[in-house]
Image 1 (cartoon, one colour):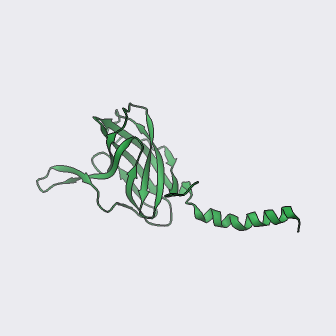
Image 2 (cartoon, rainbow, N blue to C red; image 1 turned 90 degrees about the horizontal axis):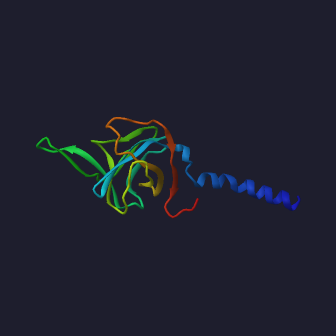
Image 3 (spheres, helix red, strand yellow; image 1 turned 180 degrees about the horizontal axis):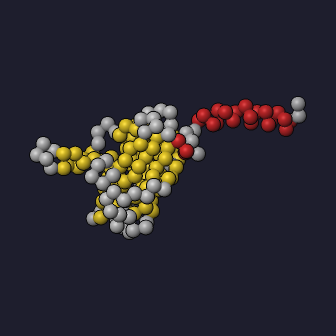
Length: 166
């Protein structure tokens, strides 16, 4: 066997290992990620579809444009008044299912914005999963969006393991 053949055979032998080490971006789809910004804080909304064969749980988020990003939801209090608060335990995303982060419901709250953002500005939001994976999604600021309006343009996010290089 020639040296080139030996190198090619070795490369083919490790290829399946490399393929299983990463989650493929086409497995998680994010639709219509946008933010509404005002008075030093904001909220991010989107639809996420888990096309993987495993159940996932979103446990947190972070972005370089805010001091803090938290999973929040609106719930009805005992007095009938809607109250917003942090989601404890994360957001379950079963295999094959979708979950909407929408106004008046679940969303990612941005607190302590580090710079002013205007309509059309873009930034990355990183979703953190219970298994250590992260999903980076591009978000556009759209303060004029009416509740319920949705752009179903699909974006595949890129999942990585924390601390892993791509």
